[in-house]
Length: 208
Ligand code: S3P
Image 1 (cartoon, rainbow, N blue to C red):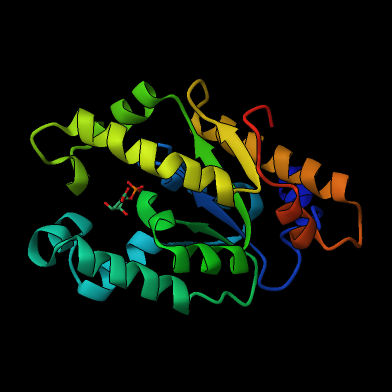
Image 2 (spheres, rainbow, N blue to C red):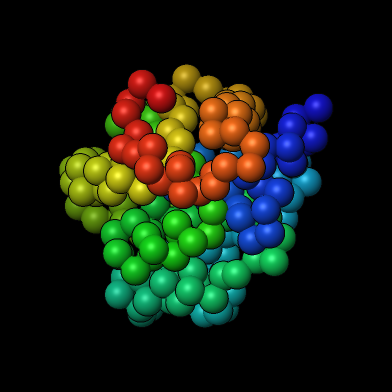
Protein backbone atom coordinates (compact mmCIF):
# COMPACT_ATOMS: atom_id res chain seq x y z
CA UNK A 1 0.00 0.00 0.00
CA UNK A 2 2.66 2.45 1.05
CA UNK A 3 4.67 1.78 -2.09
CA UNK A 4 1.81 3.11 -4.16
CA UNK A 5 1.24 5.96 -1.79
CA UNK A 6 4.86 7.05 -2.09
CA UNK A 7 4.47 7.25 -5.81
CA UNK A 8 1.23 9.14 -5.55
CA UNK A 9 2.72 11.86 -3.38
CA UNK A 10 3.31 14.20 -6.22
CA UNK A 11 6.75 14.57 -4.68
CA UNK A 12 8.63 11.54 -5.83
CA UNK A 13 6.91 11.12 -9.17
CA UNK A 14 8.52 14.16 -10.71
CA UNK A 15 11.55 13.36 -12.82
CA UNK A 16 14.70 13.96 -10.87
CA UNK A 17 12.93 14.79 -7.64
CA UNK A 18 14.21 12.61 -4.88
CA UNK A 19 13.88 12.02 -1.15
CA UNK A 20 17.02 13.30 0.54
CA UNK A 21 17.78 12.11 4.08
CA UNK A 22 19.84 14.42 6.28
CA UNK A 23 20.64 14.41 9.99
CA UNK A 24 23.31 13.77 12.60
CA UNK A 25 25.31 10.60 12.64
CA UNK A 26 23.25 8.11 14.59
CA UNK A 27 19.97 9.41 13.20
CA UNK A 28 19.55 6.17 11.25
CA UNK A 29 19.73 7.62 7.73
CA UNK A 30 21.28 4.52 6.13
CA UNK A 31 18.93 2.02 7.77
CA UNK A 32 15.85 4.16 7.23
CA UNK A 33 16.97 4.71 3.64
CA UNK A 34 16.95 0.95 3.11
CA UNK A 35 13.49 0.63 4.69
CA UNK A 36 12.25 3.42 2.41
CA UNK A 37 13.79 1.70 -0.57
CA UNK A 38 11.96 -1.54 0.22
CA UNK A 39 8.67 0.26 0.68
CA UNK A 40 8.86 2.54 -2.35
CA UNK A 41 11.00 0.41 -4.70
CA UNK A 42 12.91 3.58 -5.52
CA UNK A 43 16.65 3.41 -6.14
CA UNK A 44 18.96 4.29 -3.26
CA UNK A 45 22.28 6.09 -3.23
CA UNK A 46 24.46 6.99 -0.28
CA UNK A 47 26.97 9.83 -0.61
CA UNK A 48 29.33 8.05 1.83
CA UNK A 49 29.30 4.98 -0.42
CA UNK A 50 30.08 7.12 -3.47
CA UNK A 51 33.02 8.74 -1.69
CA UNK A 52 34.29 5.43 -0.32
CA UNK A 53 34.18 3.80 -3.74
CA UNK A 54 35.99 6.78 -5.30
CA UNK A 55 38.86 6.34 -2.86
CA UNK A 56 38.55 2.57 -2.89
CA UNK A 57 38.73 2.48 0.91
CA UNK A 58 36.34 2.92 3.84
CA UNK A 59 35.31 6.30 5.29
CA UNK A 60 37.42 5.84 8.46
CA UNK A 61 40.41 4.97 6.26
CA UNK A 62 39.84 8.10 4.13
CA UNK A 63 39.84 10.24 7.27
CA UNK A 64 42.99 8.69 8.69
CA UNK A 65 44.91 8.54 5.40
CA UNK A 66 43.85 11.80 3.70
CA UNK A 67 42.11 13.84 6.42
CA UNK A 68 38.68 15.39 6.76
CA UNK A 69 39.28 18.11 4.16
CA UNK A 70 39.80 15.60 1.34
CA UNK A 71 36.73 13.70 2.48
CA UNK A 72 34.65 16.91 2.41
CA UNK A 73 35.85 17.82 -1.07
CA UNK A 74 34.98 14.36 -2.36
CA UNK A 75 31.60 14.59 -0.64
CA UNK A 76 30.83 17.87 -2.41
CA UNK A 77 32.02 16.41 -5.69
CA UNK A 78 29.79 13.36 -5.23
CA UNK A 79 26.81 15.61 -4.58
CA UNK A 80 27.63 17.86 -7.53
CA UNK A 81 27.66 14.87 -9.87
CA UNK A 82 24.49 13.38 -8.48
CA UNK A 83 21.71 13.86 -11.01
CA UNK A 84 19.35 10.91 -10.84
CA UNK A 85 17.06 10.63 -13.86
CA UNK A 86 14.46 8.89 -11.69
CA UNK A 87 13.35 9.73 -8.16
CA UNK A 88 15.84 8.23 -5.75
CA UNK A 89 16.36 7.92 -2.03
CA UNK A 90 19.54 9.82 -1.27
CA UNK A 91 21.28 9.13 2.02
CA UNK A 92 23.84 11.73 3.09
CA UNK A 93 26.62 11.98 5.67
CA UNK A 94 25.87 13.93 8.85
CA UNK A 95 28.25 16.77 8.04
CA UNK A 96 26.98 17.42 4.54
CA UNK A 97 25.13 20.57 5.58
CA UNK A 98 28.33 22.24 6.79
CA UNK A 99 29.16 23.39 3.28
CA UNK A 100 26.90 26.03 1.74
CA UNK A 101 27.44 24.68 -1.77
CA UNK A 102 26.20 21.28 -0.63
CA UNK A 103 23.02 22.83 0.68
CA UNK A 104 22.27 24.25 -2.79
CA UNK A 105 22.89 20.84 -4.33
CA UNK A 106 20.63 19.16 -1.77
CA UNK A 107 17.78 21.56 -2.53
CA UNK A 108 18.14 20.88 -6.22
CA UNK A 109 17.76 17.14 -5.65
CA UNK A 110 14.34 17.06 -4.04
CA UNK A 111 12.46 17.02 -0.79
CA UNK A 112 14.75 17.13 2.22
CA UNK A 113 13.86 14.97 5.19
CA UNK A 114 15.64 15.58 8.47
CA UNK A 115 15.93 12.59 10.77
CA UNK A 116 16.29 14.05 14.23
CA UNK A 117 16.52 12.62 17.73
CA UNK A 118 17.48 13.51 21.25
CA UNK A 119 21.17 13.99 21.87
CA UNK A 120 21.71 10.98 24.13
CA UNK A 121 20.02 8.60 21.72
CA UNK A 122 21.88 9.96 18.72
CA UNK A 123 25.21 9.75 20.51
CA UNK A 124 24.54 6.24 21.81
CA UNK A 125 23.66 5.03 18.30
CA UNK A 126 26.54 6.89 16.65
CA UNK A 127 29.16 5.55 19.03
CA UNK A 128 27.81 1.98 19.03
CA UNK A 129 29.49 1.00 15.75
CA UNK A 130 32.81 2.62 16.74
CA UNK A 131 33.43 3.45 13.10
CA UNK A 132 32.80 7.21 13.11
CA UNK A 133 36.14 8.91 12.52
CA UNK A 134 34.93 12.15 14.09
CA UNK A 135 34.26 10.32 17.36
CA UNK A 136 37.73 8.80 17.60
CA UNK A 137 39.23 11.66 19.63
CA UNK A 138 39.84 12.11 23.35
CA UNK A 139 36.35 13.18 24.25
CA UNK A 140 33.81 11.87 21.74
CA UNK A 141 30.86 12.93 23.87
CA UNK A 142 31.98 16.55 23.91
CA UNK A 143 32.81 16.45 20.19
CA UNK A 144 29.35 15.13 19.49
CA UNK A 145 27.72 17.97 21.45
CA UNK A 146 29.78 20.54 19.55
CA UNK A 147 28.89 19.02 16.18
CA UNK A 148 25.24 18.83 17.15
CA UNK A 149 25.16 22.48 18.19
CA UNK A 150 26.81 23.47 14.95
CA UNK A 151 24.71 21.30 12.66
CA UNK A 152 21.26 21.41 14.25
CA UNK A 153 20.36 24.90 12.98
CA UNK A 154 21.67 23.94 9.55
CA UNK A 155 19.40 20.89 9.34
CA UNK A 156 16.48 22.99 10.55
CA UNK A 157 17.18 25.61 7.90
CA UNK A 158 17.31 23.26 4.94
CA UNK A 159 14.74 20.58 5.85
CA UNK A 160 11.25 20.46 4.41
CA UNK A 161 10.20 17.73 6.81
CA UNK A 162 11.49 16.67 10.24
CA UNK A 163 10.96 13.26 11.82
CA UNK A 164 11.81 12.64 15.48
CA UNK A 165 13.38 9.17 15.57
CA UNK A 166 14.37 8.66 19.23
CA UNK A 167 11.46 6.41 20.15
CA UNK A 168 10.97 4.71 16.80
CA UNK A 169 12.38 1.70 15.01
CA UNK A 170 13.84 2.22 11.54
CA UNK A 171 10.68 0.78 9.99
CA UNK A 172 8.52 3.13 12.03
CA UNK A 173 10.66 6.07 10.97
CA UNK A 174 10.25 5.06 7.32
CA UNK A 175 6.47 4.91 7.77
CA UNK A 176 6.53 8.32 9.47
CA UNK A 177 8.61 9.77 6.63
CA UNK A 178 6.20 8.53 3.98
CA UNK A 179 3.23 9.72 5.97
CA UNK A 180 4.71 13.21 6.36
CA UNK A 181 5.62 13.40 2.69
CA UNK A 182 2.10 12.33 1.77
CA UNK A 183 0.69 15.03 4.04
CA UNK A 184 3.05 17.60 2.59
CA UNK A 185 1.95 16.66 -0.91
CA UNK A 186 -1.73 16.85 0.09
CA UNK A 187 -1.39 20.20 1.80
CA UNK A 188 0.28 21.67 -1.20
CA UNK A 189 -2.36 20.28 -3.51
CA UNK A 190 -2.09 18.51 -6.82
CA UNK A 191 -0.43 20.50 -9.54
CA UNK A 192 1.19 22.95 -7.18
CA UNK A 193 4.88 23.50 -7.32
CA UNK A 194 5.67 21.19 -4.46
CA UNK A 195 9.26 22.18 -4.07
CA UNK A 196 8.83 25.90 -4.36
CA UNK A 197 6.10 25.87 -1.74
CA UNK A 198 7.87 23.41 0.49
CA UNK A 199 10.80 25.78 0.58
CA UNK A 200 8.54 28.69 1.37
CA UNK A 201 7.09 26.63 4.21
CA UNK A 202 10.31 26.89 6.20
CA UNK A 203 11.55 27.16 8.86
CA UNK A 204 10.22 23.81 9.98
CA UNK A 205 9.23 24.13 13.61
CA UNK A 206 9.80 21.30 16.07
CA UNK A 207 6.05 20.64 16.16
CA UNK A 208 5.89 19.45 12.56
C1 S3P B 1 30.10 12.49 9.17
C2 S3P B 1 29.15 11.50 9.21
C3 S3P B 1 29.36 10.20 8.56
C4 S3P B 1 30.38 10.28 7.45
C5 S3P B 1 31.63 10.92 7.93
C6 S3P B 1 31.39 12.34 8.43
C7 S3P B 1 29.82 13.79 9.83
O1 S3P B 1 28.12 9.71 8.05
O2 S3P B 1 29.87 11.01 6.37
O3 S3P B 1 32.16 10.10 8.94
O4 S3P B 1 30.51 14.76 9.53
O5 S3P B 1 28.88 13.85 10.66
P1 S3P B 1 26.89 9.25 8.99
O6 S3P B 1 26.08 10.47 9.27
O7 S3P B 1 26.17 8.24 8.19
O8 S3P B 1 27.51 8.67 10.22
